[in-house]
Image (cartoon, rainbow, N blue to C red; front, side, top):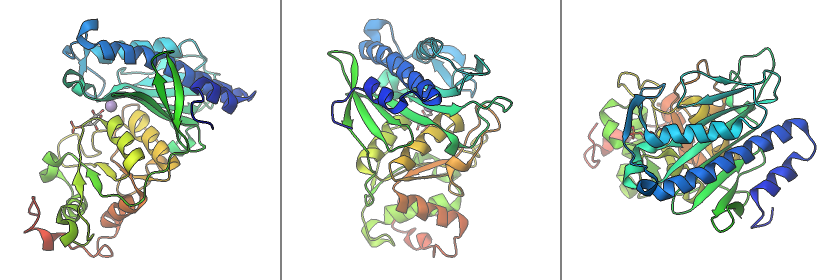
Length: 344
Ligand code: F6P
Ligand code: MN
């Protein structure tokens, strides 16, 4: 694909005359269209009456809903209602939005990921996952590797749409002059050897031992078993963390922990973990719960959570070994307890 190619040209070339692909392309174009409106709304912020204040309500998973969450949800649904779909699953709706049961696809989405940051003018995003609809099978019941396409939009200094239709990952940036997404990076590959890790360290006391061990190894830096100094990053916005990993590599962890309700972490399988895992794998990285591949999980409920550990393959594999075979991992973390920020 050539640099500067528009997203709509890309989706139309991908679709050709194939019925299923045409439905996927229409969904991508609809979400992209809504995301341009969302980008403009967010860009105006308080000038457009956006305060980032809570609505006084909470979504299906108990998160406080911000005024923008609800407006972005309406904008995406309005876009998708123009195309054939069997079901829509949104972070902001308790139940599915049902369409034509014979339509070829269903779409799961997080309309505004990271929205708790909106009042601080930080990067937020929209995440989506497009899955096949099999008549007779409940929507969204297939494992993540069945996704037909996945992507996310980051509303940062630039608004960029990251997309995979199962043939690598391409990134399109919004050209605000003509309201068109244009390709800026094609066939993105996650760098293999980098030294950044991202985790909300305030949850340290709730983590399982393998997660503590991995973080201890990173904190031990050049003096530790990894013989390398690491940098820690935590933006608190999944889309921004994923974009950084696609650019600079490293690893992101939102593991399960011992807080009530956090046994499977915080992120939702259908519209956060599945699409991110699909994109990261398509870019040559790995995505795991710590114990198994995220794309092998199938959801049993719409808002089900799953642990998500994603990024450069070597680090994701190391974390899996620490979980699944600690003896083989030759755990050294306690040796470094006296050097670490966190003693274990
Ligand atoms: O959607 C959930 C989310 O806002 C992600 O964007 C982000 O990675 C995570 O929650 C941050 O969680 P916490 O506030 O627990 O660090
Ligand atoms: Mn989210």
